[in-house]
Amino acid sequence: MNENLADLISQKLPQPVFRLIQGAGRAAAVSSQDLYLVGGVVRDLLLGRPSSDIDMMIEGNALQLAATMSSKSDKKPILHKRFGTATFKIGDYRIDLATCRSESYTYPGALPTVKSGNIKQDLFRRDFTINALAVCLKPGRFGRLIDYYGGRQDIENKLVRILHAKSFQDDATRIMRAVRYEQRLGFKLEPVTLKTLGRDLNMLDTISGDRLRHEIILWLGEAQPEKILKRAGQLGILSSLNTSLAWDPLWKKTFPTARKLSKGTQLTQLYFALLIYSLDKKQCDTLLKRLGVDGGEFSEIAADTLKLKYNPEGLDKSGLKPSEIYARLSRYSKAAIQVHALCSSSLHVRRNLKLFLDKLATEKTYLNGKDLMQMGMPEGRKVGLILARLLAARIDGEVRTRADEMRLARKLING
Ligand code: ATP
Image 1 (cartoon, helix red, strand yellow):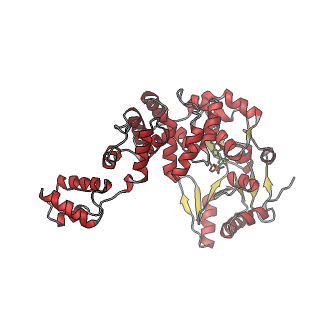
Image 2 (cartoon, helix red, strand yellow; image 1 turned 135 degrees about the vertical axis):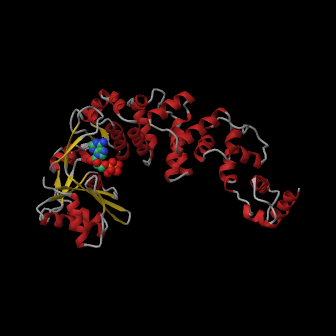
Image 3 (spheres, helix red, strand yellow; image 1 turned 90 degrees about the vertical axis):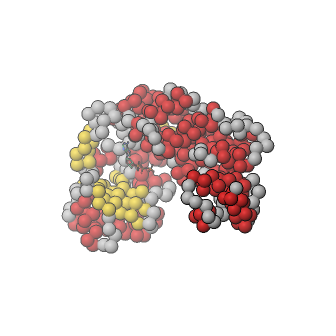
């Protein structure tokens, strides 16, 4: 079947992006090189899903093509000379240009040995058939679908299929990618792929912490990560990553609720806090070590989440002054507080944390340190203490206006 996607490409991609792609195909042809759209964008075009990350591969020299294109248009690429690749940005779209290559792996989990190659070899190094489709951009054949490995039929049948039996051994991150695509697209793992995945679960041990962490962040960046986690639990992927990690039925509720509370990177952090909430300190440390987390935001969120779990700062009672709640929580990361507001078994803890998140966390004083110094306060530690006292008064409703706050500040400075 000679399927042609030219109309689909021109309808689905913004015109400036379409023109760049078309121009790139023409420029490549002038130097007798063939250029292709590959990977996710082809899959998503066929599925009618939006895709703003566009990969183009050339059988030739990507940097040379980028230079030719840049000399003929006002669209200037960012060159990554070390990798021999180039990136064009048009609005929200990112168009990457690279050279076709073939890869071989010396041992499981190793970085591949890379040589330049043709489109067939380039597609063969990919993870799944649905990601191993290409579209020819050569004038005269523009839009023709290139399908060496049956990806078109697998899209039709909604199947995630590896290209060869050693795929997961070559790169076990594909195990994590497999469930991500399966759940995102509502596909199924093709039966042999499913069996191979089960056989090769221990290959996850060959993957570095950085790469595992990256894949977990990609899981958490999906629209409904709980579906992926459930499937990963069923398939034994979670326990292969860490013996204490398992699907928690509570996630079915807490993940969607988390989505209503947060967005973007904050949401990923909150999901991460949910992921480790049920672990104890030792289990959590083992997981963080496996994921190469050493310092940084995830360390902090994990530490705060467990600290609050084992010592809820006396928040499991009613009648606390708002300023007391603020003082006990202001040092904690937001994700750790949010996860306890969702998951704590104590109604009082949940209420107090919710009050903090909904109201107290954003309270501010009218006055700042400079104002206090203008009022005669010498520079020093006491400035911070007075500001904290002013904030507490504001949180508890003891002062309401700027004038109220100035009166209290004067009293505190002189007192
Ligand atoms: P997404 O929509 O998740 O971004 P994508 O298909 O664009 O999907 P990327 O992670 O951006 O995914 O990778 C681009 C392409 O590179 C994929 O389509 C796939 O062909 C290939 N690829 C990425 N990671 C691997 C891997 N670990 N093994 C083999 N091929 C891979």
